[in-house]
Image (cartoon, rainbow, N blue to C red; front, side):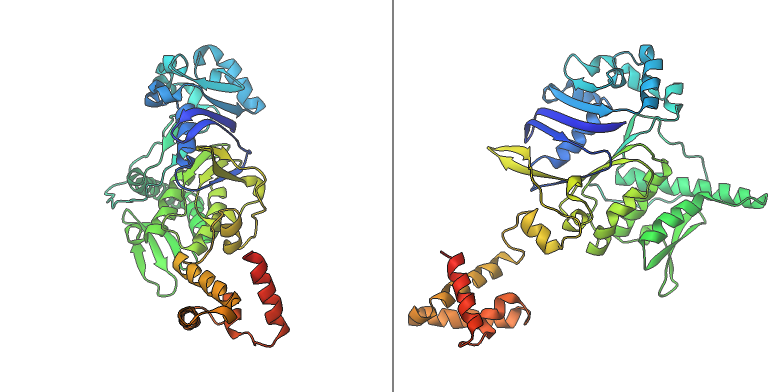
Length: 409
């Protein structure tokens, strides 16, 4: 099951809003308040038939279009009587409103107990909100951890940090049982491969005394998962929780995965989530140009503001492999990548330089003060210092002055 498009009639900033998705990676970007998080939440609420959402007047008129594989369609047809009017009953489109899916909420309650949830093709929709407050939890015994059979699940930090630890302890002991009878342990190994491919300075060792342990490669120091940095915890608990679910052919919604991550890790985080499973549709809301630079332009969806409402911007420039500065100026539409105060001083200096021969004493004093300040703080190789260091009699100066006057005309 993949999301083809969503239409939102009137929820917050999203009014008469439609957005199309591709089957693989979708990166939502745009300034705050345009509705990126609302899009993720609405997708989740529709597919999971969230009762509070369905009963809210704002849900009326929302429309979600899905695509299904032949296997999924066969399944729906086989169980059509049982599914009744649930979201899986309409193959091409799902419509939510006061007289729609809210009549069949009993389906969600009985779904986990049925054999339907055990069908090979059935997978979850998983939503990871911006919550990154991972609390410390002590595991005192090994016990079975059962994956939820609900249609969807929201992974918040507190639940992740407890559930993943218990799960890792449980499969650690299963690996030990396999070793005792001469079989090769494999469960913890897939978690090691995921993390050790991401972390360069640390290594995930596994579980000892009911606690996941990491080693700092440079010093050999060993510490628990609770001692990881905020960014490391996000990778460990979020990635591990998704890996635990064995997600393939699933829908994964992630809000601001760059939180607490060093820019180097932001560059790698998309590949990390791609490695969680196979054929997943991933929809991410982000403000990170480092993530966007890892995407082709057809994977990037830019939200803009038009007549007071959010719209999807057309004709997005190429993004893959672009520098952060290029992306900030073009796709993110920043006026400058500099501190606004510094940029204002540079612009003022250029303005004075153009009219250098006509400056009065006060303006000339201001010009020299700006010159000294910019030389003090900016990198000597900064192009903006070319006005200061250029020789007065050079042809390069004439060309530069011509360009400056043209740009300020």
